[in-house]
Every structure is written in structure tokens, then in C-alpha cells.
Image (tube, rainbow over all chains, first blue to last red; front, side):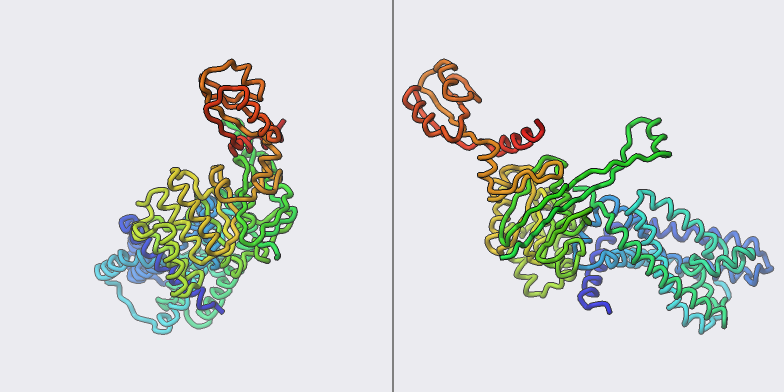
Length: 267
Length: 327
């Protein structure tokens, strides 16, 4: 079980990281804007391509709805560890955090959550504005909406843990960012970003169902919109839970091996 | 009484990439990487008793900082053993980390854009300090370090010296029993150096903490540590009282005379090695054992107006230590 002291430590880190990030409001706003641009591009492309027909069960409204939810999900499941944790490993700034009686995991988590929370300030109005302008038809699937939250939490966890694993490559190489770029390209294709997984050609779709990328972005959107049902939904949630556990295990293994190699460079 | 810090045959090797300058050499290193092993800490053994202040001396790259990083648990050793307060440092157990601190003059844990007080509050929570204990520690540190004005300003607006004081406070809020101080006065002006030194002495006296410190400034070591551990190229060269180091490596006294009238240089040279001479002021280096008799003879044979006898400066001693090793 997590100790109360750990939680108190985490809460205080979260407060400090929030206060720290508020210093960079403009920068945050620009990052936030950038995160909205991509889905808008996909949205425009797919709405044009689909015309008045449908592709793999998605008509124009479905694409609009998918990418509106996508904006929220991709932001809330974002992994920033390659940009936060990896540089601190390389430059030795991890040292003070290693010497506190609280695993640096918690600080990375606090930073991740704080970043998302601060950006919500700018993003929520944009999301709401776009939804009001585009007004896609929406028939709520209540089971899907109920299961969206747990699926989102798992997606954000997988994303954070895998992001941290890539960041920990910095214990071995100075090029963890390049590995991360490869991962992000794969997520672009197989994670339901460039297109919903259902729209992908057969082989890619089969790959997407078993690989972790879809479970970091696409799957929670499909759940929320009632795109996966019954056995497929249950299987999807099970695979997602499996990837959460696997990512956590990978994190632990990499951390234990990596920290032994830590050079604590700098003074 | 058992030692607070116990080090046995500690070894740390680093792998460093060996790459020469120039484009062609760079291209070659893409295909074939060459690595070289650096022995940063090479088989060192020593103990530090509770409440002791020990100065770690050595030139740049001698392995002082690496040793501190090993003992505070940042690094895993290549070989050998160490315990600090009975814990193996690199296991970094909660109970261990709660009782030690590593403060580095060039590394900081303070949030750059926030007032230092915010970092203090994080440390309060992370170290699980009770309100009363936190307030007491904070009060003591504010008092000893004169922090009143500093704590509510964003760290980025503090001067180097103010930042160092805040950094010290952040590292000491949890009242560690063992302090590792790495160059705590680096880059500070003389007054601020003196204040940090006074603080360390008072902290040691009030809390009985064990302190292992490195410094480039001999004044630090001179003022703080009665015992020094000298390392170079990762090897331990000397472990003992500061006075012993002087006896062993620079067993001289410097006798400085102010004369009533100029004398021939050779008249002075008869008493020892002349290190400095102008018209009326002469410094002579002489064997420590003979300092008394030489002084007596000088007083009898030279027109002495004033005379002083001093130990050689520590810089000179250290230089002798490393010079002798190399030759």
C-alpha cells in the first residue's frame, strides 16, 4: 500500500510543480495550441474524404466527434517524460531527487499531472468552442461513457510508464529522444491518431489490436463513443489492463538497472 | 563507539568515451567507439567517527566528489564496501536518506522560479517532518544563516551567496546526522565563505552531526577540519590530523624578519632557503626541528627589528603532497 507520507510528499510536489508551471503561462499556451492543431488537420482531411458517405462505419459526424474526443484524450494521456526525466538523468539534475526519501517516480508523476492540469486552462475553452461550432450529432452510449474513465486512467498510466521507460534509456544513451520519436511515429499510425483504428487496412488493424499504442489514445475514444461493444469491449479492457501491468513491470526493471549506471554527472 | 562512516576498499570505475577532435575522427568513432576506464576512486579505506568533521582534499578530478556521491548513495560502486550510519548507501533506504544530506555548491535542488520556502515545504512533506519540528529547524536555520529576507524571493533573483545559504537550509531541514558537503563555498566571496564556515562549525557544535567536506579553499579545511583525508588519482595518500600532513609533507617553518638596515643576501642565506627578500624584509624557510635555534642565531647575528615564525600555507603543503607523488 502507498504510505500516507508518500501521498503527502506527492501532493506537495504537485503543488510546487503547478506553481512552477504557472510561471510559464505563455509557453504552455503555445504548446497547448500545438496539440489542437494536429487533430484539426485530421478532422478536416477525413471530413472531406468521407463526403456524404462513410468509411468503415464512420460518417462525417463520427469523424468530427472522434477527433473532438481525441483532443481531450491525447492531451490527458500525453507523455512528457522524455523531455523532463531524460534530461535530468543526462545532466545530473536527478541527483537531489534521488536523495529524497521518496521515489523520483512520484516527482515525474507530479510533473506530468501538473503539466496537463495547467494546460487544461487553455484547452478546455478551445475544445468547448470547437464542439459548439462543429455540433456533431451524438447519441450517448452510457456503458461506454461509464467505462471511459477507467480506460482513460489506464491509457494515461501506460503512456506515462512507457514514456518513462524511453526516458530511462538516458541511463545508457544520450539519444533517448530518437527512440521516442520512433515510438511516437508508430503511435501516430497504430494508436488511432492519423485515423481511427477501424479505418486502418486489415493487417495494421490486427497489429493495432494487440500492440500497446492503441491503448494509449485510440481505445478510450472508441470506448467513449460506443465503438467497441460486448466481447470486443471486454477483451480490449483486458488487453489494456495487461499493457498497464507490463509497462509498470518494464518501468521497475529499467529503473533498477538504470539507476546502477547513473553517473550523477556535474558537480 | 562505532564509526558513522565506514569505507572499505571502495572502488569506482567510469567508462568514458574516448574521442579525438576533428570530423574524420568523429566519423570513425561512429563506427568504432573507443572506451576508456577511469578509476575515479581506487581502493580507499577510512572511517569517520560520530561528530567528526573531516576534510577531503585533492586536486580537480582526484575523486573527492565521486567518493561523496558513493557515500550519499547516488552512485553504485564497482567494488568494495561502505556503510553510513549502518546502512549501505546505494540501497538508498528511506531511513538512510532521512538521516543524511549531500549539498553541492554547483548543484541545486531549489525550484528556480519559486521562493525557496516552496522547496522547503516540499522537503517538509517528503521527509515527513512534523509541523513543530519543521518550524524549529527552520527557525534555527533562519537564525544561523540569516535567511529572513531571502526565503520569499524567487530563487532566480537571489545572489549566488544567498542561493547557497538557501540551498544549505533546504538540505538541512530534516536535521541530518551525516552531512556531505561538496565545495560548499565555491564561487562565494571571502565574507560569505567565512559565514558558511562559521555556520558549519556551529551546526556541528549544536547538533553533533558528522561532516565530510571537500573544498578547494584551504581556508575552509583549515577552519573546519582537524582531520584530513587526501586523495589523488582516486588513491588515498594521507589520513590524519592536518598538523601531521604539514609535518610529513612540509616540515618547515617560515621565519620572516623585518630588518633595521639592509644586509647582504648571503648573510641571510646562511640561515636557510631564502623565499622572499627585499630591502628590509626577508623570509627564510628552515627545517621545523631547527626553527628555534635558527631564530635565536638570527636575533643574535642580524639587525632584527621584528620577527615572526609561521607554518607554511596549506596551499604549499598540498602542492608538496601532489608534487612529491608525481616526481
